[in-house]
Image (cartoon, rainbow, N blue to C red; front, side, top):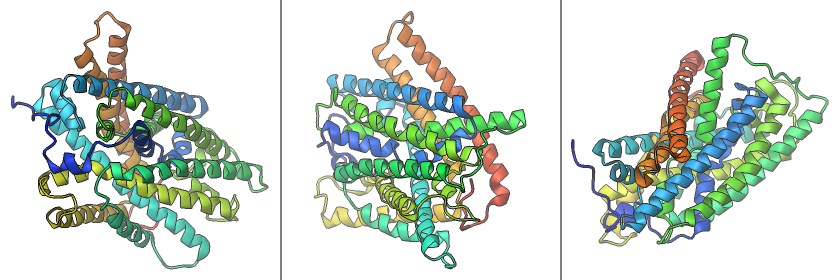
Length: 448
């Protein structure tokens, strides 16, 4: 078996580490980054996830996923702290996994999964951004001729410009704004739900699940995959890399900040949205307030404010999840011995980052399957990286006694989430195939 790639913790000589993952941040900056990576407009999908589970299983799944994900991220931060104290500070997930597990294939497994996650989220953010613009356009010009792909192209152009910000750390102020924006659209969506639920045009409430038992099971696992993807991030080591060393103990504070925001936003959106719309909840709950027939179910200024907050936060999320791709590109294309803004490094950065965003924008315009893509990404990407590997890395690093509760709890979580990931992947792919007859290239309708 080939030796695993050597960790680069002792000498940050490549440009990906020196430029993109420069370590200057404080714990609250890591909190901003982590919150942006987790608390995004995908929470508007939670009522949609609840419709495949129902009230009690939905709330239980949401709570269980929150507890397990916090525990998982905390364990990973402990493993990173342990390696740093041992003189092996890791700034990349792939190098951490290869070092702790001593496996060359694990390095490539992690980077492949991260690439799939980051590309999938970049596509999803551009798609949802274009949909936000389309919602505002239809409100202002109901008979307008512009289509979804044109709005996606506009957002892609903006992202090409914003993507030139050189480092992860340089996003800290944008990600603070992102945190505040998440509160903004959360409160506006809750207000819209209360208004819609009390209005004379309130939709009839139906919380029944699908009648066929097999369909009900598949829908449940698709919903669980969606919830997992919403809690996932897959880039915690890279976020911890932005902390000024020593990073020991700082990530826990960032996690507490992030999960305080999660507690407020996740539950309020999922409960209020599902309460009003039940099993008619859309993969973007804002769409439920604007029915095809009849008046809007909430005031225009509330819906418009929510859409604007979502739109601006999506830009921040797209930037955060692009950082691993940018780090990989600059590791190969940039010269760390030249300045970050030297022509030698500036020109390749502009070309490669613009090309990356352009490809993501093209795929977003071609494949408007936001809900389905979200489920597949959760099952095949976030579950292995965020709910299985951290437990394995902790057990391999700290080697708790095989008679201890913690050891067997970690094994149980790994076992359960392996099953959830496999079943979720199958059910999500199944739904994607079933939805294929509704799909056409460059469609202006996002398929639920």
